[in-house]
Amino acid sequence: MSHVKQHLVQYLISLGDNPLILGQRLGEWCGHGPILEVDMALTNISLDLLGQTRSYFQYAAELEGEGRTEDDIAFLRQLREYKNVLLVEQPNQDFAYTIARQFFFDVFHYLFLQELQASNDEQLAAIAAKSIKEVKYHLRFSKDWMLRLGDGTEESHNKLQHAVNDLWIYVEELYTPSPLDQEMAELGIGVELGNLATPIQEHIRATLSEATILIPKKNWPQSGGKMGNHTEHLGYILAEMQYLQRTYPGAKW
Amino acid sequence: MSSSFFSILETVKDPEVPVLSILDLGIVRAVNETKEEIEIVITPTYSGCPAMDMISAHIKQAMAANGHEQVTITTVLSPPWTTDWLSESGKEKLKTYGIAPPIGATTDKRVLMSEFSSVHCPHCNSENTQLISQFGSTACKAFYTCKECLEPFDYFKCH
Image (cartoon, rainbow over all chains, first blue to last red; front, side, top):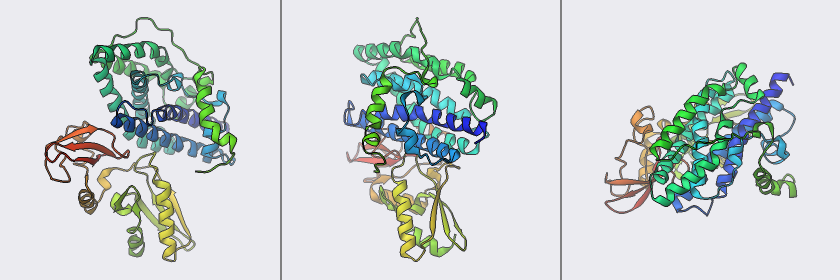
């Protein structure tokens, strides 16, 4: 396999890891949503994200051509081989926390896919064009709830402010390129993440201000997910997610 | 597309909305016949649509039942599926089934911005309806309620 192809496979897997882990997190809400409609919305979003993950992983498996399947990629890697950003592995906590995490990711995801549609890799561009139609709904959902919670009751406002303060440190990683991101962008396959910094910040700031949520003054940006250095939470997610395939290797639905 | 394949594919239904055939849904993009095999090209409605595997299996069954054993199913993502491909008869069938069909074309900006308020109730045809949730019983539907006859109903989202 050529050097570029090998890196493209790694890039595809890293792109699939974000929706995979966030989809797994959202799935934890199944049966626990504050109201039935929200429960269904969160799990529908989870399903979209897992579907997008499958598109990336199927393509990666096909390119790699070494017999590894999408399931092997999803379930049989070690913790440090997962390249998702730290934001998506953060626990659900309360509903405000889940919404703030979702909103930050959706803003990034939407703007990212918009650019990825122009990838010179046809299949990657097709995955982006397919996914962005779904992500449009996700962003509309999370943004609506940001406004309702932030500009809602004193309690909902405080909970959302608390969540935003806590998660703020994970936003910068979304648009900070890894060496792999950089290489793929230079080849015209991937997205130049640096160009997304301003639009992402502006979009987030505008919504926070409309939701009467203060932008945290202090910021200690955390990163490492793209290099495989995760917070303690990912291990617990993988333990649950991988349990079945590790205990019953090759089990099929 | 050869008309004999057409009539076979018409018998394959969407498992989640069984009144719609896969032709009504617009997910069959091509049928390519060679001496050795028949390739049927389909596209998913949504990336995570759990019905796709079942639909592929049903296509193979229906083709085999009609003597076509060598069938491969290819899934393509581009161009992405849109409700604009839903057939007119499909929209009528949806309505009869109790699901409000998508309004307008996806190229209409008002659709994308959710500015259409006039989703008609499939039961009493009233325009006095209200969006309850952007996400209904499946990813392709939103959940509405009719303020006239008070019935809840699904709306097949414009996508």
